[in-house]
Image (cartoon, rainbow, N blue to C red; front, side):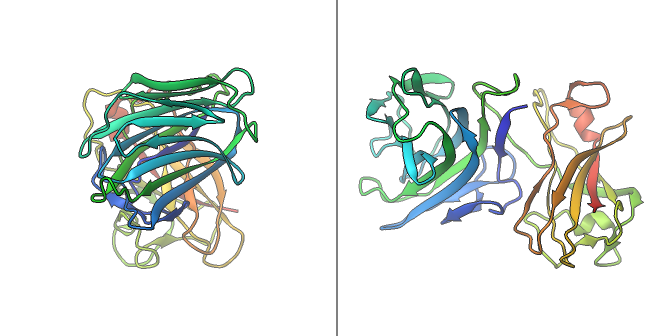
Length: 331
């Protein structure tokens, strides 16, 4: 599995990201939210994503432009290797180690577009390719290496444009693949990310609730409300398992699922948490232990599951509608 990053901002917070003037409360392309970025005069909205160093990657994001110029930087340390710019004349432009190209697809304000980027950093056979809504738009090839041979972070910015100073830019349905592993190792393609929340308790509820109510009602809010409502445990391998709401999907291909939570260690005890999924007819599946800190600034993510573990076949809507899950305390 080589999916490096998936994000739909469905938790309606920016936990886990270094950002300025970007908020997870925008009008969505899919699901319940998108990232809203508003750079003003002399200010720039930005989001940084650090990754394990790679020389080649495929990146996807959907964008809804509202008059701010968007630039996507591919960086090694503090050095910019390549940039993709949605320019002031609403075209996409590439710049990479002196190689440049500008596309022909007009990115109109007020509409969603799916932008896909393929970058290979190499001093001979490097390439940067951009697609808009699945169609080739612009590309360069040759020596893309410049000052470094790998990418270690992506930096997305939205800045004030004197040509079109109004409006807000939105981003949604982000994905990033590397080229290892034989799965998710090429173009990400279209994809839409939604959230399904707890909507009922099962017979397994070991954790202590913050109030004498159904446990699921204490963990179903989006965004999370911190220490207002919660469940907690101090004994290793206690867990709550919840029913999940129906996904509401129809004739779709479900490529992956994952669990996500906001969790902290209240006693500075060095404890961990595991997020659990339980498919109908199967056994509980642990997404692995995640070490906790004393704040809710840890983005606790379960491992992405590409198939239903019960039959090793692709997820179906009925599988998702019958899915259960929850947290387990870990050493």
